[in-house]
Amino acid sequence: MSIACQIHGPLDLRLTEETPPPLGPHDVLLRLGAGGICGSDLHYYQHGRVGAFTVREPLVPGHEASGIVVDIGERVSRVSLGQRVAINPSHPCGVCDYCQAGRGNLCRKMYFLGSASVFPHAQGLFRERFVMGERQLTPVTEDGISLGEIACAEPLSIGLHAIHRAGPVLGETVLITGGGTIGCMSAMAARLAGAAEVIVCDINDRALAIARSVGADRTLRSDQVDPASLADLAHVTIEAAGSPQALATCLAATRRGGRIIQVGTLPPELPFPANSLMARELDYRGAFRAHLEFDWAVQAIRSRRVDVRPLISAQLPLAQSQAAFELALDRSRSTKVQLITE
Ligand SMILES: [Zn+2]
Ligand SMILES: [Zn+2]
Image (cartoon, rainbow, N blue to C red; front, side, top):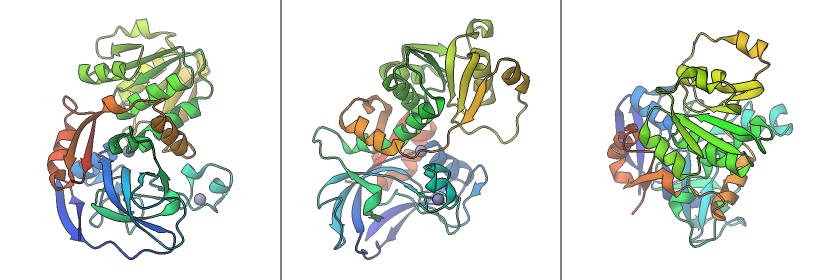
């Protein structure tokens, strides 16, 4: 038997027992190494929904995880018993026009773990033991890299994808609104891509301190800065806060001809000063999940080209999921809270 954490509706999180299914030839039985609680998991917990995705049956959340191989199907070749692995939660179909064109994150039939975007829901990774196809797994054999770090591959892939969507940033100034996990991952990705200066803004001092510890050159309190001082600040701005005020900061700070990348989830309807896009020739681009960047993220973590350790603020046993979710909701105390097995 194995325990799993399930969301039944707003603020209704329960632990349940389940038996993992039998292994097919290319399947792997894993024990959870570490599983990070993401903003979307918190939305499901607080509101029973994320945007248009509503919980309609019990949902196991969780899509940022590492695991340890417990058993393997007879044809498995990518991993072996006892190995620690990064888990890619993204299952694009591989055959639709978007997949064929190399943009699998836009797949028409995406199956993304821990998501109510499909029904029956794509059950996630906050469970003690679970079965995954081997192609979702990348072994990490470096001893010094922890299961908590490996579990950060998915959120790092989001930051890498945001910077990838921005195009070349070598020698440029990048401003990031939001110093949470995705903002910090975007800051590290910008440094990796050669940005000359990386600036992070937020309204929370703790978030800004963490952003500096992962390499932001400069931080700003967006609620205290004079808007006029933002003009021409950055070639590229990354909106990772998901707030209309942060988007306004991006519009004010992006140089003429620059790019704004929207990676945070904004409220469904908002007034938008589109004329500034027109008159200043700004490019406003979306960044949604990630594709090839997952493998880049695993590589950056296993070599510690990117050091995600300052972002992991707490690790709690799966049996204390409720307390972990409550802790993760408190930005004054948490960046990335992870669930672990004992
Ligand atoms: Zn996430
Ligand atoms: Zn597809």
